[in-house]
Length: 206
Picture (cartoon, one colour):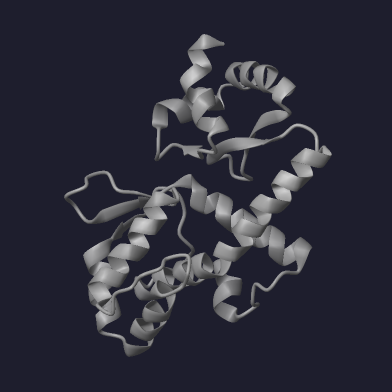
């Protein structure tokens, strides 16, 4: 199991691994033998390797829903719900601003300056972005559009939804964690009946 050690540490730390964030690790986790070995090691910890519906991202789940596991999941779910609405609004905003026909998915590229320029030219989008930037999740203190967008993208990068291949170049690649997020949104909409509005835009998104 030593050959999987660094990968296990990343998974146990809560990392989401996809083809965008680490292609070699993703390919490694896609192999059935590796999955078997990792799950065998994780079972005493009551954890297991899981993937989203499209198999585009790997992360850890619980093997059995014990009392402790349920408490952990409840806590994680509460945090997810708190960030869900601002993330959903951001997904919609990107889709509308860049004129996309479908929701973002792993591998899509977003050019920050293009996003800024298109938002500048639309008062409605600018107002929505201003409101979004001040949300507790993004926590921008600036009134300047450029700074607000940079703060939003910085936070999305910190939370693993975006990858910035080059620190000196302002473009970002969407990671597989976005696919996981959209699966969570669909689950909440269909199963939990939590406040995810059924507006036409959101229906098209999810």
